[in-house]
Image 1 (cartoon, rainbow, N blue to C red):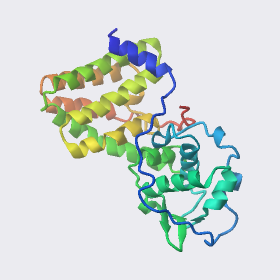
Image 2 (cartoon, rainbow, N blue to C red; image 1 turned 180 degrees about the horizontal axis):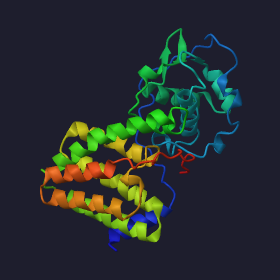
Image 3 (cartoon, one colour; image 1 turned 60 degrees about the horizontal axis):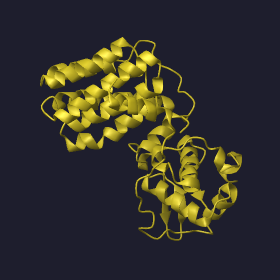
Length: 295
């Protein structure tokens, strides 16, 4: 087994680092609305009383302590419909309910506003926005939908999106001779094979996710590359119909290997065909969405 494979096997067993990218939470003033209209009791009255009990933190919220956990909690409540469209969100009530500071509440609402989930207006306050305004390509929202009431729609939509993006990416990637990336793809196949032999589903999944992300990057299309995070999120939430990617077996491994071989040969048609075979949904393959991942 290569050094890369050994490293990835070890890393997969350790907890996520939780490192978050730099944010720009204070770019603009945030409007408070102490007098915002209230429609019935706050919807968070039935939520977990302790933010520390929120065991899962979405990709964009990792490593940010109470701020990240509040983003996670409120985001899930909005996406699930517990906080319906046009509902006012009063910072004071949120702070009291979740026992966090005013600063934490403001920063969290700014993040949710950037995702299109809420809007803040002077003299109006903060309100939940309708689904049509949400950034449905945001990895956090993908994850929240995948574990909420909209999970069936999210599974179908992610599967359809991958079917549109990845065969094209495989065809385009065959025309780009970036040997270091192709070698990395081959390394991912090796790691997947070793993980499968060890019954290590976590390492298999992580190598699979990196494989597909690298393939899209290799396509040489910046707009497609921008969508690589969506494909990664689709794989990580494990919320789609069961495809070859979701089955750590020889057939899945063979499809991945054939993609690598086709890329090395510069055969775009073969790479596209192998990807379509990998993404085929197996009959009866629909599965119940598992419990949220622990990070």
